Length: 172
Image 1 (spheres, rainbow, N blue to C red):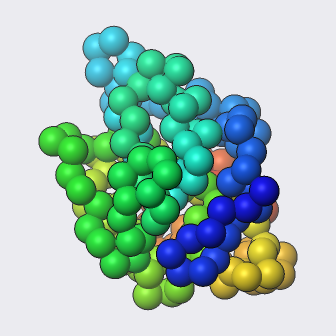
Image 2: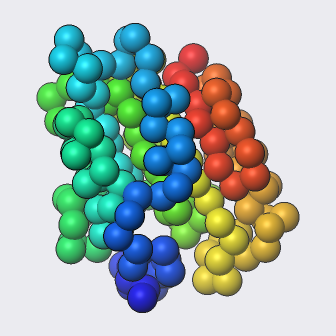
């Protein structure tokens, strides 16, 4: 199953119902002493939330979740790379950016990264996942690796985990 986006790009993974394996496997790494309230809850922003599978996983684990996507079937609709990310009254502790950045142009990615930096709390942690897709800006494994490095370098955050096509970083 696929899901059509406003920019005529689609993600074959959006039909899946369970959270990404990378999120399940690295859930605890996303947290630190400075990004949770006294009840152990964090504010989580899911950028490019798709059908909400990662948002629902985080909600089920008791976190405050703010999902955003270009389609209007789950979360708040925003034009990624064009619109400002709406502020929710506090800074974000964890940002999920799974399987979306490769569908954005360089200009759109720069704007999204600028917005990520604007809403990120003091010790915010981000998870980014990419994959090569024929209708994306990273059609091959090599292009995906180059894109991953570009995103990581643009963020300028501290690396916590970094492997091919995915990374977790914390605000420096």
